[in-house]
Image (cartoon, rainbow over all chains, first blue to last red; front, top):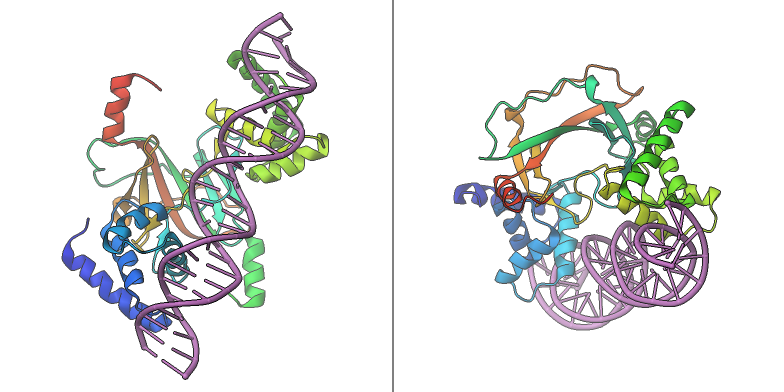
Length: 154
Length: 154
DNA sequence: TTACTTGCAAAGGCTTTGCAATTGA
DNA sequence: TCAATTGCAAAGCCTTTGCAAGTAA
């Protein structure tokens, strides 16, 4: 849970952006976004649904999914991981990092030795024991960069 | 595709580990593992199935999934992302990093300023444009560390 | 009024599972 | 022989989608 002023600020920005994007200001949408803005726990859609139902018992799970999808597309929310969807497998058991193309979703390895050790400057949440750090470098692979350049479409 | 000596080495190790773990040395299992060991592209189960069928046309998708699951559990394969499964949402739009508990899967944010910039020492695959780097620190949160200590399991 | 949204329910992907038959040790 | 494994098909999650009714602008 974040502090009230912060939430209020986010809600104001949210309404502005919705207006700019032509998204209607529905009660359901407001509550879904507020629920996410208030949380710090990176909830799943199901969890969002559970929380939102306390305020709007009649809301449907479909509406929650639909709004999440729209808001992610419009850049008002983010997804935590790059890959949820189908499982990706890796036969390389040693610690290493990944390079992911945001367009075609291809994944390449980066050897552990090719990245300077990650250093955290600040204290972690009390008692968290880090076992390993993985770097995920996101961007565009050469093939996708070329395709995007050609179509000029995002 | 990796070089033949490397593959051969991995296959030998694989058979040893299977024997140690009491996993039968079936043709299907061999081919599934070899297919993954040969690949550098982090395929999905569906893709593994597609490739394995060229060698064993009668294999079922279920067998592919079952073997992948067993091999991941036994530590002979890894999954690329930490979270595939249900989508996780993040209202924090600024660049930042994540701390993930490997046991309860909780996710916490690490502010961008709290991590030294990631530096790559080696050249990336030709033409890859990195747009941003995310650090995923994996480990055990305080609560899970305590629970594990108590049950001495895992 | 009109475009956007909602709830509902059905459909779709991805993955797991029960079962009888088969195979490896 | 006996436990482990397979193919098959059904079932289960998570997510998307078509539709008619309802709502915001």
